Length: 351
Image 1 (cartoon, rainbow, N blue to C red):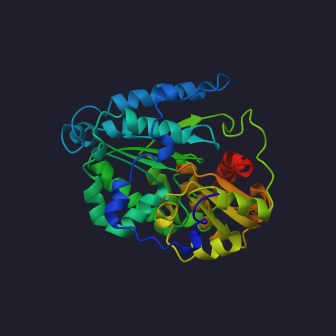
Image 2 (image 1 turned 45 degrees about the vertical axis):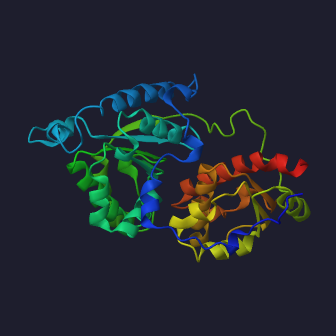
Image 3 (image 1 turned 90 degrees about the vertical axis):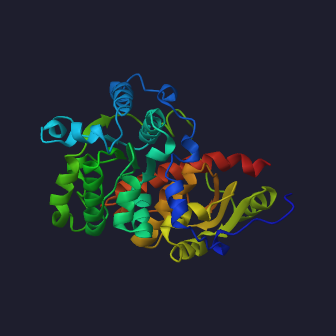
């Protein structure tokens, strides 16, 4: 048994300084060691191999002049070069086809020191603007060679205008862009509330990117057994006490706690954890709660933290209405990632 009892996520109230938000804009721990040559393309999906070739060339092309120097004039002078060759790539594909692996590989392959490259999720980028302010964010990122944005989403008109303005300013300063999403740039916002109100801004964003489609099946479940069924409350609690560095919370209480913690702090909320143990998992009650849970699932997946749970299976977290609505891509991604983490957690029960 562990010397001390498990921690509780509900007892944590992290405070994250703005400096940490900037310093942490690197590929998450799960993708520290990934490279293009560690990507395993599906031989039945030629678009995957093509993506490696295109992105390798894109990375090599970023090794010239600094973004604020000759590179800026070459791409965005009076000659119409930018229109012919967008200063960005956009990886579109389903869940688990390796988009984040490829995006992180691009970051690693770009010939620039880490301080001149930034990597973060769309949510982390908007949180950075909230912490630093718009102008300071432009100043902080404007000297970079590359900005990688994972899980690019436009969830409301405010975020759309914010990110559109930010990326436009960064492109003007010669920053190369790369992004992943489950939706092509020209289709962002479809099926979302008030999509028509910000369609013009979405179309403007799409001009910055060359779309790169990646087909394939979810590698997290390709050829693997189904995720284990939920365990009993007693099994989960016993595993939490037996696992050093584990947390133990009841799921309804955790959902309430997430409402009191800003999503930009969810990464810090999981600092130092070796496993997350949850009892009484059940369907989430509303969309706001569901979207917070999606962010937590992303942070746990990035950090490779296993999730052991009792209650309902993770594929029953979200209602049919949610899974058929405008945020369905986020919910399916969360299900995919939590399922993978549940599989990772199964050995904890036999300890």
